[in-house]
Amino acid sequence: MTLKVISTIRTPLLALGAFALAVSSTATVPALAQSTAAPAPITPFGLPADVKVFDDGNPNERSATAVVNGYVITGTDIEQRVKLITNASQTNVSEEELQRLRAQVLRNLIDETLKIQAAEAQEIGVQKAQIDQTYNQLAAQNFGQNTEAMDTYLESIGSSANALKRQIEGELAWENLIRRNISPFVNVSAEEVTGVLERLEASRGTEEYRLGEIYMSATAENREAVLQNMNRIVEQLQQGGSFVAYARQFSEASTAIQGGDTDFLRLGTLPGPMAEAVQTMQPGQLVGPLAIPGGFTIIYLIDKRQVLMADPRDAVLSLKQISIELPDGVSDADATAAIERFGNYVQTLSGCADAENAMSAIGASVVANPEIQVRQLPEQLQSILLNMQIGQTTPPFGTAEDGVRVLMLCGRDDPEDAGAPTFQSVMNSIEDERINKRAQRYLRDLRNDAYIEYN
Image 1 (cartoon, rainbow, N blue to C red):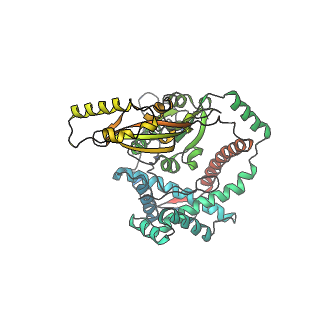
Image 2 (image 1 turned 90 degrees about the vertical axis):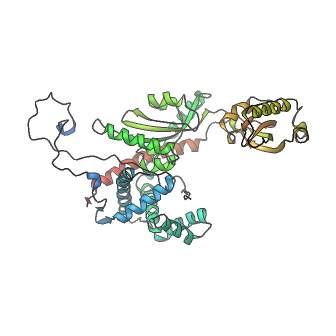
Image 3 (image 1 turned 180 degrees about the vertical axis):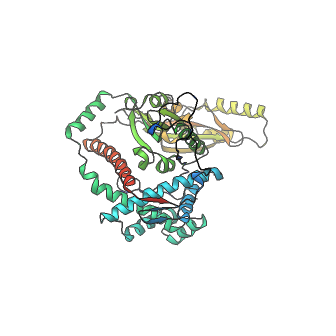
């Protein structure tokens, strides 16, 4: 099993993991001998494109420990956090990928330590009672108030309660820092909010898209390494990895803390490659990595809608399912004939009141669901049902093994037109965006001021 995640007031509190791949940098020194080859392109610091490194060691194979302003991060800390991540990803991880993951986890632990230290230095550190309360909430969510069961579970996967509590402390410390040092200094004027509302009204009916994004910056020097890592992330996601967990652990975008969720965006706000891609995507589709200014991104289309318009998929339907089972071992020809007879029969039904007659006439099963939202149904059926009239049925669907069925539309309550977002919700959205951007800069400052020694 995997643990669920809880949230604080505005932002998700913690991610229990994702398989994250690290972009490692290698130290380089200029070669001593003159080269007779053509001059290489100018690189940062004036380094030549081809250098001789006087060390055969791989910097990613060193002991993965560090001392951050005097606080020791041990190999055990890293391995226990890795277990949280790999368990949440529910995918098989090769030893090569584990090595990259350990490097990324070390970076995450360093950032986490810097946040905790900064909060303590400003006397807004997290109290043990707060950590225990959040841990107990997680236990209640996953194990029915039984914290001992969660302790045992964490130990069974090679992690520990202390590892999870340290992650909780880091998230809470960061929120304390943001509340004191960033949020009070972010201002949004009434004119800005009014302008957003006016632009929304002007764009009524146009498409907007809710995306999940995983962004990584890239330079000319590390571009290929970043691209390789992004491709590995895509492979892991296609094998069932959690997009939200990957984004929280790995994305460099300001949306990382929300699991990569951008909320709804219009095409004009997206870089060209992303705008082109999302127009051809369907909800649930994953695309990437895409090259965009500054790096690469992986995008997942969560949902799409029309600005300030009601979403037809919010309609509530009353449906009846009529289904038949086919005999075990039925031949393809017999199955095709049976499905055709079934389809022809349901077309003779005069409406929902007549559906039960199918039980006696052809031995079908009839199940009613008087209140089901269109978006809860499989994508292939949504458009079919939205174009049906009361009393009509879908084409037969299913398999010979699982049975064949149709859905009959018995009623439909269409959603009301969506109104403009409230003044306060727009203001909150702008504030959150600015807070996230400043928080990223603040974390970079903490890294730059830190004394970190690697072992």
